[in-house]
Image (cartoon, rainbow, N blue to C red):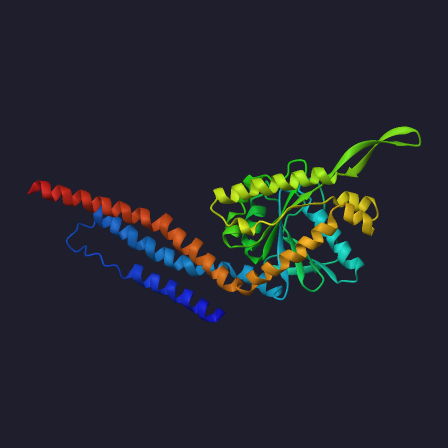
Amino acid sequence: DLHSILDQMQQWRNDFAIALTSIEFKVEALQTTSALAEQITLLKRQIAEQIQLWEIKWTELSATQSLADAFGDKVMLLVFGKFNAGKSSLCNLLAECFRTQGQVVRYFYVQNEQIHYKDMLLREGATETTAQLQGVCLGERLVLLDTPGLHSATAENTALTQRFIDSADGVLWLSSSTSPGQVQELHTLARELKRHKPLFPIITRSDQIEEDEVDGEICTVLCNKHPSQRALQEADVYARAQDKLREMALDVQLLKQPVSVSTQMARQTGMDEQAMIEAGFECLFTALLQMIEPALHYKQRKPAEIFLHHLQEQVLETFIQEIVPLSDQLQATLNHAQTALQQQH
């Protein structure tokens, strides 16, 4: 029962707070200006401040939960990658595919923690164009969240991405075929992968310039990469990503088989059935369907997962980083004082 689990975690946090604040320090015999007394005062103050921050931090997550509730009956996939990985281009092309099939397509952006719907396509470009979280609803069951670039120079973008990242049920990890699968990016995704969200690598711009003869003249044309080239890149990305996940002590079962696509080739050849197959989109759609089921499993437990992440990252990790060092320092001072007393006797 989800509500029972949430109640238990809330009770655990309350019990932890009570345990911390009930620690008694008998300081009557200490001078208030002594190092030991000052350390005890600092420790008690830090504990009180951290407990107050827990509720503040949890309240800040309400925007994330609000976004999740707004799309409560849909699977949300985070589209992640460097700002030049082709995220917006892919989202727009998928939207066209859904619209062609008679499905409802709705674009939106998030501003001031509110969802606003719009008619325009997602902005595309070779530089950072996503200054805010934006996305598109595809049909009745799928939402793609297009985020500010992983390595955006805008600190505000990075913070925005991180704040709403909890809303996603899975991650589409995009990278260009010119340098596919930069596994160091997985460090940025570590929080999500620890939360057991499926990870689907998509190799974009899987095309190349070739020479061809047109009307007796040699010219350059854009072509899909050969299936053998794509297979090699996909196998390489999959192997390196598996190694990286093991190195990070993460579940390799979360990793899906990579797929290669070329949005430019799909558009250039009219997006007919054969063109979409050759551009890799039939494989992409098949993989997305296979990914939705585990994403739905995650969605069922999402409220508990979000509170668990709050406990792990904003309660326990902060306790370890802020309180434990003060406690260790206090213990060292006590040990030193005890040794000094023993030497006097």
